[in-house]
Image (cartoon, rainbow, N blue to C red; front, side):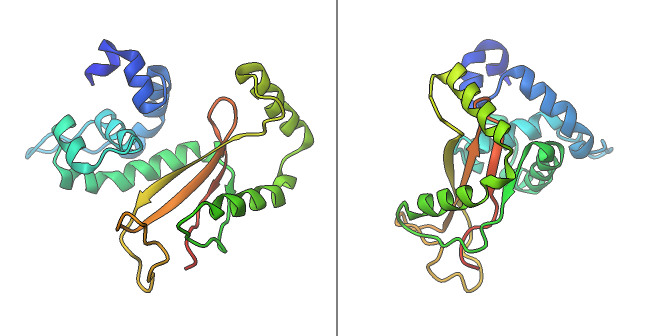
Length: 199
């Protein structure tokens, strides 16, 4: 990708990682996503697959990525699950999951309160020194006192699941889930909610 060499700041802003971090991730996922060459065609490189997958997190859709990377939408939809599974497998040790089986989809911000309650109830997973370290590091790096993490979320478009009714319906006229997560001062995930909706 040209941005990587021509404009590293834009590259970091879009992918939210440095080129070194991307290289490290690429090195880890390459054995899991690399396909064999055939006489019919060359396989897509793991680098292109990873970059397309990471650009989806910026809010781009298949058609804009297909134009930007010159890879057909149907091809993107075929390799996307493999790349996401590979990323999860290689980074699994850095993620702590919260099971949100009682989560309800809502059209307002009450999900934040439920997420906060779940975090508080599961804070016993942390050792006191881990919380103290995160607070100290947040203050040292960002000058935020007493901060144990940064909370964010991503609206993900989905197809309405069977018997999903209006649980996932969004005011914009589409079906979505909100995937909230908590990160520490260097952006590694502390908590990720992995089950949303009431089904």
